[in-house]
Length: 512
Image (tube, rainbow, N blue to C red; front, top):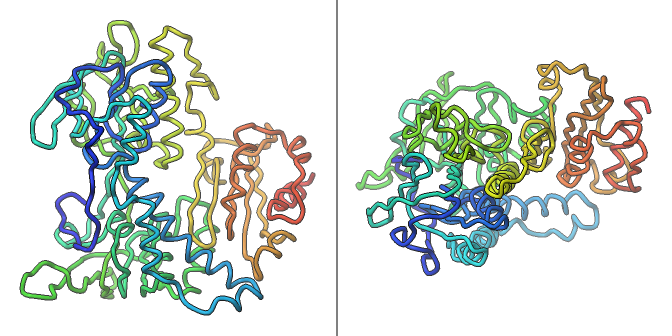
């Protein structure tokens, strides 16, 4: 959120420094990782497993966005209401549900998953894995050097014998709406760490974060309006966004599509003028939406602004470009390789702009840690497609789940992406209407799409939409990554009666 003032009812951070190492006490290590989120943690852990020493430099909480403000707390907010909705879809179970969701209990459970925004457990894990944790802001300071500014303002330089890895993640991207930067509002951090449920909420942005949190807060008791500049979940297959929009509307969310916000303002509830009163979002058609809180969820951008990339000739306003092993590209001539002829600067996760998802970042991080160790040992690097040190899935088999109800799960290419890639494809669409789904919930509504590369007769993309379809995703991932021929996939018999029967119906619809 930068310098934007935000509502005060969020939780404080608790940095546990008992087992961290002062920056001044660390002069060098084999690998220095800037950023201690799950990506940085995985790079360091794999490097240590490969026989190297590793230091993580982290200014906030070790464990990063996913642990404290994204994946874990958001899913903790979502799951209780999903369980309640699932029970209400089943006669017999429905009659046992006599009350409404206990919002305070949901928030308390959310707090337990963030350990009260205390990273003591994460620090203990890192130290136990032989990773040195240093508190401070890390910046590249030339070849194989990292400057650390400690919390007390002192600076120290740590030399990396083998590699520096940038894993600084991403930061919120604010749209050009008049008054927004000066108006207190929520970003995803404030929403997932909120200490109360607002009576009313306007959500600006209809990507994964906007859709998930709009539904979560609606189910927790807020009156929610969702404002989308185009459609919902526009990066997914179009039908997925349509089904989620239908579900949100059925639950009382006011969904505004193809709508542009032009200005934001906020009143003060007292003489302190601290901007804690109602917030007003004005749309292009003149409509004024007034709510207790405004959540801006219009995307994120790579956090490269203050990482010192300019010291090695790299831009500070664009994603850090990397090759298939995570080694940075575009460095000034002669600076890309160290004196031993090996790459020394790497990056992984959101900072690269590629597939900004925690699990994909961790996948790349494992490859980066492994390849740094392999190069340090003088071993052969396997960086061809699907090689041990390559990140092929980052380009061909990205997996994602949007934890709305219905869930949207996908792997690989959408139909449009496959067409743009020049593939000769066949697309198979059908509703998820099998014995397993009928038993799973009365009135089960779901949809599936399979994108087939006709020349190779393999699946290159799958989308499932429906309650609990996240558990179908890995089967689709194995089919895509394994490039399983359709004739062989036919012999993967789904158990009856499960929702996985949709695989049989997809293949039958294809013509097998």
